[in-house]
Length: 218
Length: 218
DNA sequence: TTATAATATGAACACTTTGTATATTATTAT
DNA sequence: ATAATAATATACAAAGTGTTCATATTATAA
Image 1 (cartoon, chains in turn yellow, red, purple, blue):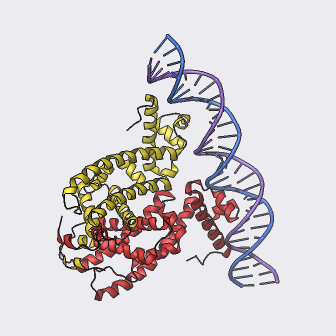
Image 2: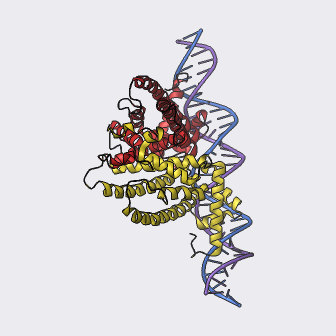
Image 3: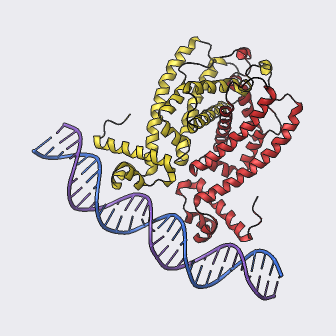
């Protein structure tokens, strides 16, 4: 998690700086935060900041990178386990327990501050762009695996890239709403609802008991 | 569109300023753009800027507000027409022609610059937040109308608020990808794919020809 | 066309923030 | 204990901000 190769003072300093930045961003927004704000909050000299980071954006991006890497590696690990387990199961059923989606909601709950900052788009383009990239690359892998399992013969009716970005967008949309409204449902419930809408579509979600029109094709 | 109550010079000045800002943001990112950059590009005196706008953010937000208002009013108009037309049709079929979703893709294509700026999250929190709000409020209205038509009796299995944010997120996700990759499909095709995924779910999109598992419920 | 009201401009100003340099002190690792 | 590393205070130049003011230009309506 935190780099052990660093001097103890340096580790402490960086931790204080990123915590101060997070708090200040949530208080008054990224743009309004100055370096002096950060170091004053962290109770450090202003010059100390420049010993560790180039500027405000550098600090934020490095902090986000840490969180993203941690999530990515843990999800990747979980994902491998799942794809093994599900080899012996009906594959396109929404997997209920230990799904990567559930994991994302849990991770977001544990790191709510940084997730809020990321999803609000603070720090502009680069941050949100990087997150969307991660989410849709992951979705691509996930979907192309499922697709190969199920449709060795048929071409998909919609390009995978499009599906992946639909998937990433909807996940980020639900995450954002969930965090901004104070996480009114537990992660498991959010994940369940997400899977339901994703796999079965709005038609099912809106009219749960009618199965009549499903066979039709547009 | 542009306020007729303004002096001709003032209209020209504001237009030049916003065009300059858009171009500069796309060139080097919101944060890096200074007021002097803007006025130099627009070939205006720096003090002139402050005659019209408080700061950089004010200029951007006003420009976005204009675009958003225009879209909102045009969609609202279209939406009324549709809901009348569809009263006499099977209501939960994805409506093919003249759908509000198609309209959004068209509007995005016509105003690609400002849409890119918005969706990249330039100008931070307020902008993206406002857009998500508009999108999900619209989705709320759209969905609750459909829901009432179809399910006067049953409670929806998923809260409308959640569905709306799922919907908004997926639309914004697809829009973003589409614009950032140079609009590789025509608006009509994007809208069609969006409707397909939204209403029928990934299951249908990924395995278009298998209708076997659809009846099941998780 | 002309009067006058509204806009645009350049120069100057105080102020904030940034990023760097330097000399000094404090802490860590071994 | 000591050599290396990190933190600090102070100072500085550069860039950007937002405002004021006197002056010039342009639009509008009588």
